[in-house]
Figure 1 (tube, rainbow, N blue to C red):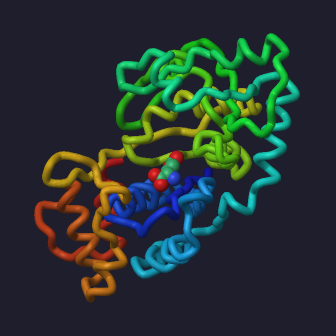
Figure 2: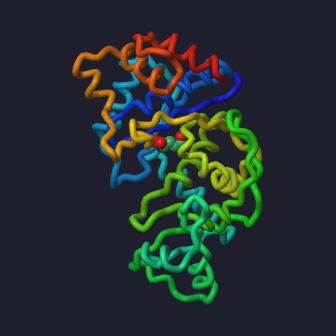
Figure 3: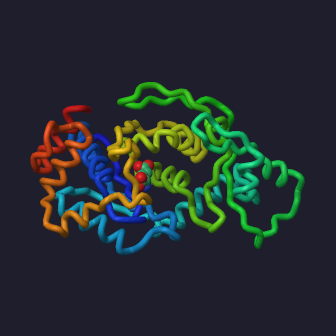
Length: 291
Ligand code: GLU
């Protein structure tokens, strides 16, 4: 094996067709590039994660025949996140932010993608030595360097992005004391020795900030990245759990075969000309042919 790739679903709902497509890309990349597969359950947001969804991820992937070599779950890795945070704190790279959502909206500009670009108001606050009232809700932000990150996507080409201008200093722990996705994923990708990241295009904007944060945490060679196209619904919007996208579990339980679901997904993703049933191996080969 020449490296390690991960599949990293969040257990905040049942898996849907979007996950199935992502899994096909991950397993295809692993086959093509001879990588070990790691299954990471991204339950960093304990207010939304549910144990039955965690169990359903293991079960549903197994029903399709997906196999992985190792697995982890973020809720059991708190001490790693704590020590990464302590490392950043030691270097004065973290500060509490007391801004409410309303203030954030009113006081900061937006990037061209519509994201709030935090201007560092609370950084100035902590510099004036104002006492941090621990009972006042706050998040913790990391100070990101003001510089362009150059990175390459195997499908989309070269990017030059400055996280300071995309989003500004971003939260690594939220107001509810939960580790953020950006922070947990960086610590995990580093600590779990992930060499390849293949995931949906909707997360592409996170890549430069993740590379910047990993650099602060000491990883100088970032993973190889590839962001795959998403399946869109009939109105052109991506599928999401929030919008109650149909779950694979519902379909499996209603008697639709995994092969039929794979055929449907490959058709919707324009990988196959029809919805004819596809065995897993064939579906993976189809995607591997695109890499
Ligand atoms: N947990 C994220 C999701 O469910 C994936 C994050 C990633 O691959 O970096 O979409």
